[in-house]
Length: 202
Image (cartoon, rainbow, N blue to C red):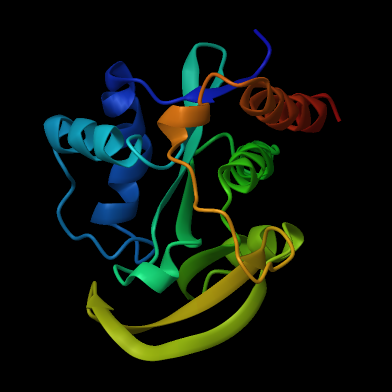
């Protein structure tokens, strides 16, 4: 089966959790220390999808990875900025999944009217830095020793990507529910899947 990038569904919660759990239990990539339950993951997906995209990559009937956007900060003036996170399953890394998911996500966020994307990376993590900088992110700062997990104090670096030119009076960002079934979103999903397929063939 050809790779497919689509919006997450309620039934994806268990598959998403199977990808995410190792990052909670034995890695400093996520600062969560206790793996969420399937019910909690279901609620997270549903909450994100009221405003932002949550996408999954499906390959041969299994989830190969997922990506989502979320609120950057609460104050009103931040509403054109988002935070993003991407997770790829063991066995699917370095096969274009992260690049394909991000490509679809950024096209959709641009269509919604967002301008800035931020990614937080626990350091060191050369693989994640490599992916983000290949997608156009640039480093903007480091919060030194801001987290403690698995017996270590950890630095977190911040990377930023500009999605579109600044405007003096930007239009209000649109909720994902307003454009989810548009031709532009369908094209964005297809483009990301095409990149994953091309990477697998190569």
